[in-house]
Image (tube, rainbow, N blue to C red):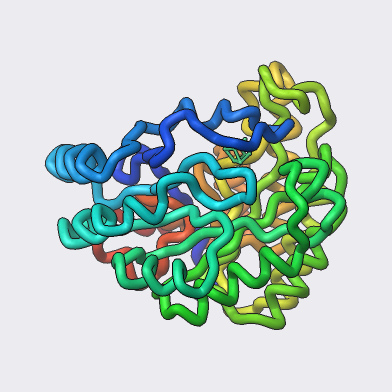
Length: 305
Ligand code: SF4
């Protein structure tokens, strides 16, 4: 990874998000309350998915994010029945990122056979946080097991994401999550996201993590994974819901810069200016941040000195 380049990712419009469960989710997490599912295009049946992806491709999409809600055990709803359709979407030439939820080895192999390019999964390092936020009895080891299954199944890229402040805005298991991942593999990308107090959810009024919190997690990730691309995901406090507290967005982004981040989805102008002041070239890429560098010739990307 060339550390003289800062990668700025713009997901929309070339990489739309699709929910394969529509607005359904058996969990009702206090930081989400199923609200984020409403922002995605629904495709809950295999034919609907193929049809939707076909028309997105005709309209110029280069890839898709397939996501959705979970069952009571944290497994992605509808995933198994969608796999043959996902293979057809792969055969259309679209780059596929799939949020997987928990998967066993058998399902991981089927995901690999379906041609998924990037499997993305949450990694949580504290069992109490898992219970409090997702309401399930899983452990940090269960998350790691999913990572291992996806990794061992041979999916080209397995990209975990770690949410800074998942435990109601406070740092809890983030560092443990990174240390656990380190025992299992060297992902091409790790996405760092930041708990976003979202209007209409139970955690709407919490204090979001600070730039210092983000710096702590990113710098730890940097030390443990010197070759991995670290990106700051779009899911973070980004201003609109903070009403006049735009400074918090910038504080988080600059904390990530200080920690050694390689890029960000929808960076602010302040973050871009900071990257330039550190002597870095800006590479603007119309894709999601987990896009592997070797896929960049398949999307719109340009570097500015
Ligand atoms: S499982 Fe995912 S979609 Fe469902 S409520 Fe929790 S965060 Fe939202």
